[in-house]
Length: 406
View 1 (tube, rainbow, N blue to C red):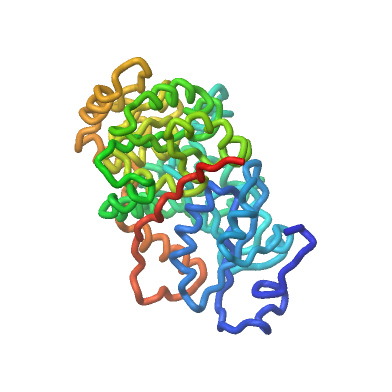
View 2: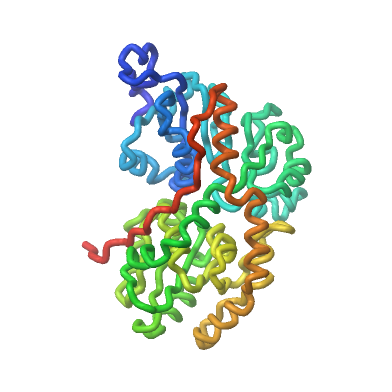
């Protein structure tokens, strides 16, 4: 949608004249990237079934916003241009990224997209603020000294200390609501067989999940040939290799281009999950994970999936982060060692106690995120919550990239 196209219904000036439903509150969901969109939808789903509430969406400016317009079209939602969103008051603004939020009118609830406190800012590594944790510093929360979000939703109590050190002005807005993505992953465990079938695996093969975040130090950017070449040598009757990539990688280079780079591995039997949130179902199906420093790796370890880490994974993890614990416990993937032995090492390293320790670092409100986050949103809207208690529902099934190319 171009900046000149304004919607008259349901959020336009005088739009209520055209409403069929009796809307009491208008909510704006701000989508910056395909990555953050999935986590944002987790929050949206907690209130969109309320027939008093209308949710509309907008695409915010972001360096990684390729793919967002298509994503929103597939959702079947009302999409406002950024220009219209900037000039329209809302009863609530939901976002999982911070860019541009100072331009919007309405109380902002900022939710996380991934494991909070998972890494320090790359710009800060060699600078004076070498421990600046991504998402919890003044650059993300203040605009010329003004606090932008009304609520900063945190997954863990320890993040309050990080916030106090990096952006004390935001402490009054902080609310520890847990991690809704984590709760949904936990709620999905009983569906393991169904997730495996969605990947085309209905036998006893070992499912090897391979995950890469974005950037030059990621698995894809730093060591994909070493990892993929080794995994392609595994006997296909014993192992099924399934790859999931960060949306910023897919849309930063273009889905067709990335698929082309993966073609030689797909021709050897490697399965690739489509861009989006399919990684969540893959984790539930996985027997072992080869991963880098992205959020998928600590989520997997917390679920009890043995992890083989790539070289350097965890180097940017702040002290006390879930990824720090994973990096210390998980053995490093080695291309010239027998994979079965590496899997056994990974399983031994991630015992029940270690997995539970990782899970405790992901969320200090396990199983309660839906309740706590919904309460925070309704409080900002000044509404009574629905009588029915919210729950964390199982994640959707992963979908594989089509094998045909042309």
